[in-house]
Length: 146
Image (cartoon, rainbow, N blue to C red; front, side, top):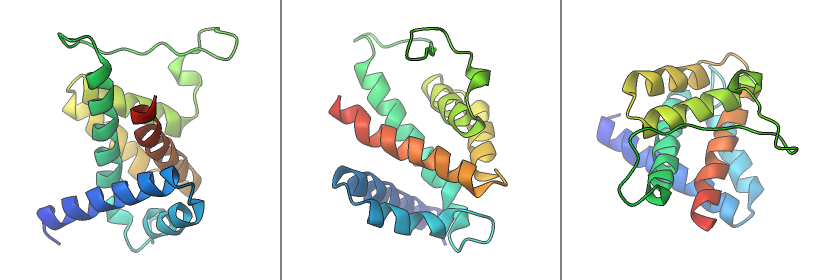
């Protein structure tokens, strides 16, 4: 499959997942996941570029909300429901990788982004891959609506 076809398929898949979430069609979303999750999945090779596409969508939305003159550096402050600071290393690895991937994209750190995407796609635990992908799809869906 050519790079152009892969990109088209990935964009279509990202749109399908976000649209399914928008329509509250969790059956549609859940049917797509097994095709990409796990080393033996028929479309396992699409997980990494799909995550990259969703990270780019999220980063574009965050940049659009940044100060009009743009931001030179993006950081994140995490807190729990009582507003206590939470170190990023206290998060579950899939969520931590997603946050770091988005920050890397925002800060134009290609190597950091590649490392986090590889961590997500190479996670030997399919539940970790699903967790990361669900966070990305949820954020890509929710950010434009807030």
